[in-house]
Image (cartoon, rainbow, N blue to C red):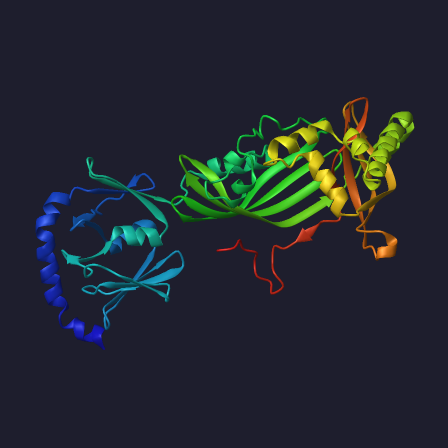
Length: 413
């Protein structure tokens, strides 16, 4: 085997590499190595032909990695983050994790009886970033993401609290569908509905480079009318001094009504009967106008702030009015509201819980029907209650693992 034949030449390699380093060591022997801001005594990186090397054994020990040496094959090995690294003094290859081979520009050198490895390559395998301060002759190593957890947590909290496209990285594909001139944060409405619990928790995070990470996040938002839990996968990237969201996918969603929702609805029915009737009457008027394709009444009973946001955000000449005209022309949707009740009634906001019987066409045309539980949000404007948005409560899903039991992944992971 080639490696065994090289054993006979190893002593010669030791002498040659020692001579190669003899002129370099005096210039660079004072380089100091720091790991996590702690100086590592007795470990001095050396630069040769523009490449920085580090004695592998004390370096591995400083990072807490295992090392081993096979006297027969002269194979040197270690374990980095659970994966094995293998190399041979005098050869120009490094094998990693049993499946990746790195070919070096120069053979692995030996100096003063110690085998040296290229610092940048090994640090990358160990997922450490490098900062070389040439003027002060210091090399600082820190794990990818060291001290960045708070900044990433802040990014995700802002994302769920107040959405803004400014939180997306420059290559996030969703930017192509957004009006970047619209200030999403400034125009976010303040709701009367109280939030009882809000949490954004990073379940796990893996830094794939000094500026990129993959993570799973659980978002919980419990309000007076809805308890919601979501789990997302994210790719985040450090860009222009800030962490940004590069990609995302929702893999879990659960929505439940609060345990006191029946009590709240009963109280509204008993103490604010006429007001809740007005809410339900206006909502029925909205669906009647929608089903009859009456654009004037549909506009009149739709939240004007919703229409304004649509017109400000959507590109081109597709206004909300023109969108509804197209909807009426090319579709034949019908909505029937069932078992409706008011579960929240504020000064300017109301929420109705009920069932929506959704039909895609007329009965004589073989219509498809879908009945689902919904929360319908209304705003008080122009002297009556107007439709704002709805949430389908039957949209719970769990895709945290696939049919084979494998954990969910974003595309490209």
